[in-house]
Length: 348
Image 1: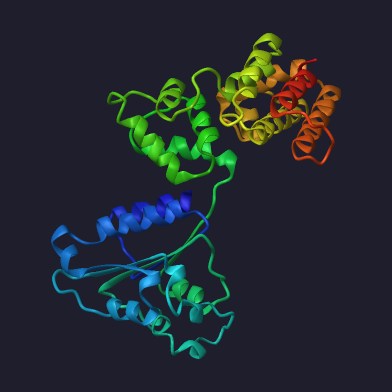
Image 2: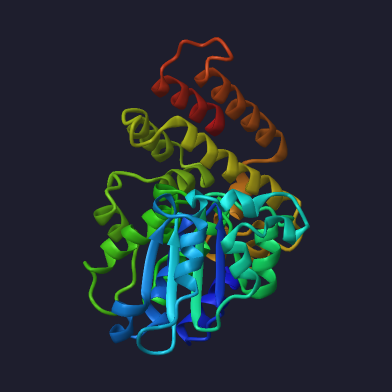
């Protein structure tokens, strides 16, 4: 994230390099950076004459090099963006595991990258996979331009990313709302952006996003959500936890068992870790567990109800439920029955 924000700031300040190779498994950061370069790289007047937006499947490396070598018709800069560059015809020649650059001299794009034009910004958007650092393309790009690897975020990093993105919109968001968005959209950053934008247009200026806004505009059930179940379990509020479980059990499509098991496993893993942390202050727990300080109290409360012996039984119940749901252990029980049995094993 820090590398992404640093590079984005440079682009917005119009500090450009002649070459950008944006590669990696997370398409969102690649799209965001290439869109920023497109927006800030040329003036509106020059864009019509000097911008070339190409697609890998429709062109080849020699054509890209040809566009990049052109002189600007107006202004002082040419912009060439190659989207889906992983499909660029001839790109494989630059991805051979060979340190001898001269062996790739027939690849016009590699020849260009050796000596990129100072009048051009060339952007290669290589999505969904990384470029081997041993290849000629990578080495030349790193030497003569910017190489940015767009990495997938881990699930526990998503709420913080949501907070950062919402802050960039000059808005606020309640911690529970950020975590509910994370649970709903997973690590799909493009979808998260769309959902946040959808919420934004329905808020007043300066209004912070709360959990009700997420439930209303993202299409999440307003009856109960995973955080209410987690809180009920943490406080060992048996009646409420069972009531939520029955609602979830009756709506398997909205509350699939694998996601609930993952949530419960993550929750109880943190509860177990809290047992071994001496400093149980909100700040220290947030640091050790990688959570928002707002949620620290929930795990401390759960520690009072679930000792290490009980946690051992709970983890066994979670594992058995998972294996039964996959047919590895004999059961024949429905989604609803498995979930209800699991909750009874947790609470009693």
